[in-house]
Length: 261
Image (cartoon, rainbow, N blue to C red; front, top):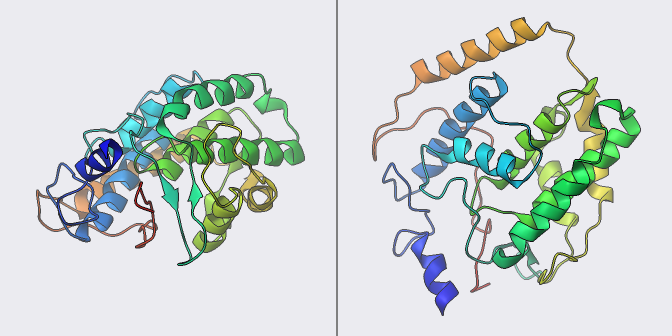
């Protein structure tokens, strides 16, 4: 019952809409979230916000805080409820780690990641390592929302010294979601030893890992700055009011589910 109450506390009563700083209590929140989180992501990629590259849980939390700061009071904080996904009605849910396991899991995963010479890896090894690191982060699913987006930026920052980079536009959204789903076996993951299958993720990261763009860093940063400015000028989001252009992320009815699943 305690977890049921915690789950409900994240939501507006009688809805599946997360409580948010804009006061939006209907599906408009998905467009608002896509825009606002997307804008914050552009700021990170443009280097406008300094996140220490400690390659640990604190770095991931700092990324998440910045991405969600316009929307959620719990941005940068680990979730306090169980979380799982069911993409096909009737199939067993695929559960992420329980809340109490998250901190220790991330400490273990990032400690291993700090031992990897990311900038020196040949492409084939980088595909394998990034797929595994993402798989571990995905199993943890540390936050109530904005997990995949935070993890992708964490990976980008992790390999920023590599001659390769990550272009997530190389795969379709459905292909990405299926690989993330299929990496976790159905059933509840009650411990950090939850079963993982990295093969689906390695297939998509085989497309995502590409040669780093030859565009000079200053020019690339200038382009991102212009994009941030354009997004800011195009849309004004007001409390409970209109929202700007939607992004590529819109959770479906079976997105994240809590203890009642």
